[in-house]
Amino acid sequence: MDWATRKVLAWRLSNTMDAGFCVAALEEALTRFGKPEIFNRDKGSQFTSYAFTSVLRDAEVRISMDGRGRWMDNVLIERLWRSLKYECVYFHAFETGSELLAGLGQWITCCKTQRPHSGLAGRTPVEAYQRIGQSDHGRHERQPVLA
Image 1 (cartoon, rainbow, N blue to C red):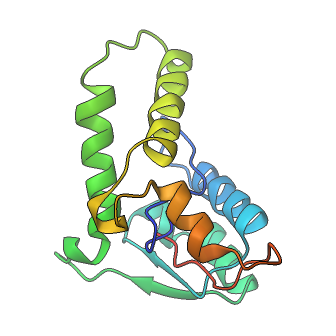
Image 2: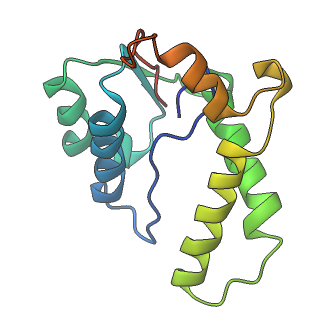
């Protein structure tokens, strides 16, 4: 997620604690949107793993990590997860992993493209990202802060 615009840049679903799915999402975000100046992460085992942190270090991205009990350090991600659970996961009775994956994809796409945010002056995350992330030449003027 880009903090400035709340745009979800990449995501994956897994039913394991393996770091591979997180690394894949990180690599996709870096490939599609460029390297951020800072990557904020929590102390989850996937995000503290060598596999994950080495991708950030190799890309020369500064790593920021939340302190113990510092949920506010990552409040935008925590809010996204809460909304996703209450508006999508708990609301639907997904029978299979494939159904869950499709449902999450629809929900995230809707949030990025159709749900305006008051903190973004009534724009959707995609509109806000396009507005501040691109110059007249179509190149990114700033580096996103990812979480």
